[in-house]
Structures are given as C-alpha cells and as structure tokens.
Length: 246
Ligand SMILES: [Zn+2]
Image (cartoon, rainbow, N blue to C red; front, side, top):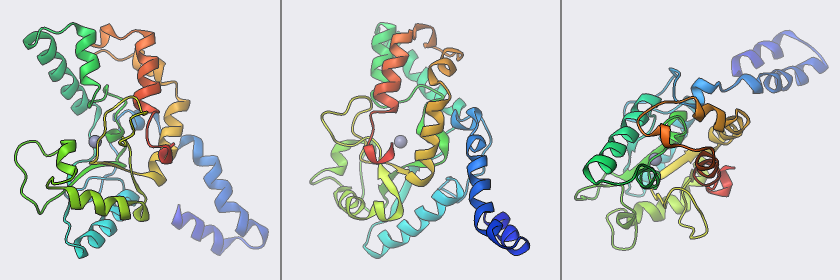
C-alpha cells in the first residue's frame, strides 16, 4: 500500500494525488481478508522468530517488548498464530478426553471446552494479530496461562501492571477482560490483540455469516452443534469481548 501510494503521488498531479490512495484503500476493503484467512486456512505471511505475527502486529510487539525490557519485564510469547488444523487438534483432543475418559455428555464436554478453547475456525489466533504473553523473567511452576499467576503475589503481577499501563500505547488490548458481566471465554490476562488489524478483521468475519461457515465444518464433536448453540457461541464467545476491540 505504501509503495503504491508513493508511485501514485509521484506520477499523478493535482486533486488525484490526494484522492487516489484513499479511494484505492476503500475499494480494496472488501477483499482485504478472505474467509480462508479469517478461519486459519490460508498461508499468511508471519514475522519474527518466536513472535509469528502479521507484519504490523510484529513491529508493534517488538516496540512494546523494547519498552517493557527497559522496565525490567521480558515479554515472552507463549502462543500467537495458530492455523485451523492446530485448533481442530486441540478441540478434538479435549472432546475425546472429556467424553471418553471423564464420561461427560457431548454438550457438557463442548461447554467445558469453550470456557478457554475456541471452536476451530473461530480462534482469534487464526488471524496473526493475537498473542498470549507472559514475563520470561520470573520462575513459574506448571501451567503458565493461569489467571492467578497474573494476580497479586503471582509471578506475573508486575507484567500485568505494566501491560495495564502501557499495552494500549502500542495498540495491544486485552480481549477477554475480568468483567463479571462478560459472557463467553473466561478471563485471560495473557491474551492481547493488535487492534488496528483485528478490529477490521472481526468486522469482516461478522459480515461472512459465521453460522453458515461453522455449519459446513465436520470434526469430532461438531455433529452435536445445533443452530441455537452456534448462535449463542457467536454472541458470547466471539462478540462479548473487550469493547475496545469491537
Ligand atoms: Zn490466546
């Protein structure tokens, strides 16, 4: 985009110079993100070893990491881009464990899975804009992505304070906030989203009829999805997030 704008600016004169780049951007808007891209089924370009985000999100993350470093915090990526197949494997493994090992009814198992994990095709991690982050400095035992570790006395308490104060400066926003009125996914103090890309991506995703897209998918457990279930899931788990990201 940058380069194209530059070429236009240098080759066209008068009013066209001012109008052309923004018109081109508006015309491209509808085609910016495909269904395959939004559902984690396209090969997208990712940047940064151990970062794996889209270019703009990567650059902002690197800037944020530098700033945090200066304050004694080592921003470490636990998980960022995840494709459809990876999310499908996570979902199916949990479904199998809950129904076969724990003897849960299929719908009860699915409800438990979607406390923290998404239905494949609907993960924000498919977008290359969202990232689970911890502080690499403190030692932590066991699972790192546990809310209590980010609270008072936890190893990531300082990380959380720093992010509360600074992440928005770099356009990273918490997605699943600690708000008792919020439905859908539980509080995830580690999951941040790069708003300049993820807000238009969510808008685009909503316009694609997510219900119809999900009805076409078949994976372990998906035969139990009803229309009502998917509607509620979209409302609660995809859309009931931090308002700054809508
Ligand atoms: Zn996450």
